[in-house]
Length: 155
Ligand SMILES: Cc1cc2nc3c(=O)[nH]c(=O)nc-3n(C[C@H](O)[C@H](O)[C@H](O)COP(=O)(O)OP(=O)(O)OC[C@H]3O[C@@H](n4cnc5c(N)ncnc54)[C@H](O)[C@@H]3O)c2cc1C
Image 1 (cartoon, rainbow, N blue to C red):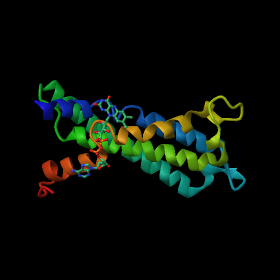
Image 2 (image 1 turned 30 degrees about the horizontal axis):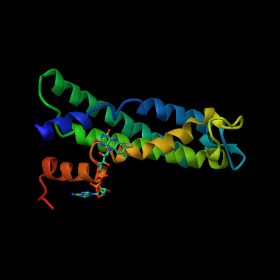
Image 3 (image 1 turned 120 degrees about the vertical axis):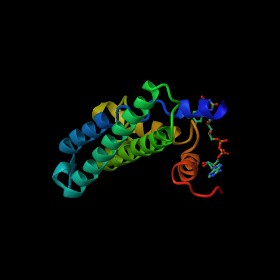
Image 4 (image 1 turned 120 degrees about the horizontal axis):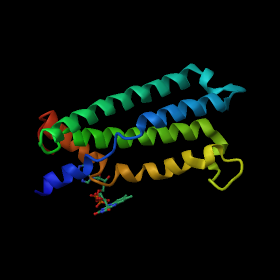
């Protein structure tokens, strides 16, 4: 009962909003300058954002697999650990990359008139570490995936 309860807890919502965040990041990259040109013109910036988009799409489809299980009346499966691990790590990497793009602007709080996007990227970065810890730390999710999905030995 305890394990099933925890699986429900960690299955909730970690894939939500990731695609929107990736598109907002692309929009930020078009508006912010890097070496005197829009950051978007830097191929490595576009490649990083494209990687985020691919991972966000993969999470979306994993979320649909989870939904299918629920519609069939089954408890959450290993998808819940994958969604928790993938979603929280992606959110953290997106937030840290936004800090890189923002450079010194990343230090500005929401109240500052010079904060880009009303300081939301800095807020996201500060909020993104907690989810990698709660509902079972990400190291624990690695253990679960290793043991239950990949069939690796315990310990
Ligand atoms: C923002 C936030 C909100 C929270 N909200 C709630 C809440 O609403 N309700 C609630 O009950 N709790 C809540 N928590 C607590 C949270 O569930 C625990 O912090 C979390 O489960 C980790 O437990 P711990 O802090 O005791 O770390 P520990 O279990 O002591 O872990 C310490 C470190 O060791 C690692 N570790 C531990 N065991 C293993 C292992 N077997 N293999 C590999 N690595 C391991 C962990 O990954 C971690 O890095 C919240 C925590 C945070 C940060």
